[in-house]
Length: 597
Image 1: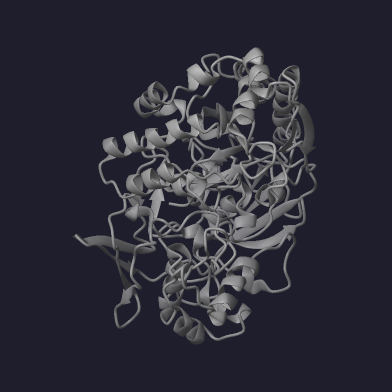
Image 2 (image 1 turned 30 degrees about the vertical axis):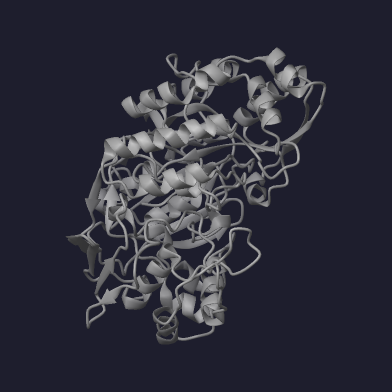
């Protein structure tokens, strides 16, 4: 079910290792709201419409969160309201079929074969979701035509996706029923994540992509049906497919209301109506929605308010109805709990903060230098200062692959990975010994619009400089746009999980993964990742994942810091927001059930 994304929420189940989203915190002010303000008649019935305003930390940047450069939490939140697929995930991280969109069934175990049948979903312009949409969806997620070499000097990947293509990479071209509504997909090898293969975040309207690529939908379908299987040893140019890939990547990126309304199309209960740059994105009810989860509200506006204190003030003043801050501290938590007529849900996010070392930088090409720097990171001090005031029993996170709330899988991984032994305590003398008189410069990229990250950076800087490192501040509110460029030595940010699946393994830790921004590469890890993602036995698979975890500590990959604490604060005028969702969809997981009382 989707990639991990830049941090905006998260928490866990045993299977919760899918694709990640980056989480940041833009230092954008509150700004105004072009919609009806607080809106809604509180005396009206739940079905009578109304307006809800939600505070968001980051700024909206596009309607395609599956694209590498727009893989941000707020974009995913908008997608949660404007896209549907074959499944939904509840707060317990259990998968449920979405039969209002379509059905799926496994028809064979060997070879693994799954049949997908559309019910009658359509885009908000009235165009039916059809064979072309399904074929484009599969092409993007399978990477069927990709033939880029590992060094990137030959061939290409046709779609720049934030996640990985590992779930569908072994599949053949789908077969379709005569009416195009049933698609049969056959895998060349087993895959543990087959049930979440088609992430709705990657479903874009084929007729719009075709238009942007300068062709008709029928022509697009023909190109996709005739695409050649990629072979990195013998790359072939496929110019028409390249046009489609470029259109998929770039056509849906916008920061203000676009002139071309085609890029606003929705298949979910709501559709984008208005975007004010760096300020807000407003969605209205999709009148052409014909699924099983129609929205009750007339309008939802996401307002960018980068500072948590400003979000609290907006909630107190009735300017927003819901807030779910990325970072939580005691002061903000206390303030929220003091607001009258506000309900607060608290829980562990499926998210964690971490420091990654860039294996492509001159500073950290050397293993001993990496180890030395990691020995200086004051993880306990960071936890004590930033997290324990909110969660007294919080502990330093000692796994890259599991978070504390996962219980047994986390405990077993920590027993195996030696994280506590290697980096349990700050060891300045040990770091100095490894450096042997060297004074390397470490440039750290992070979001300096996020107070928690600023504090973390300062604590790391002060400690590392005691060992002889020279730490350079690369803090930038646009940090996420620079993450893939690699012009830094270390990065400080967070990942948030969708709660299901194992895509994170390929996305982040496999050589060339879509989220492998620090150029980590280990042949043993690559092999373990492939084996784990094909392993249908959960216990055995967790053992393999724990082995990957062990390698990351042995290789001085970086260090996890802590599992994030989260909360949702909601005006008591809003109904339907009554169960904490720890994964990356957060409060939006059941947006169709929201209403004004």
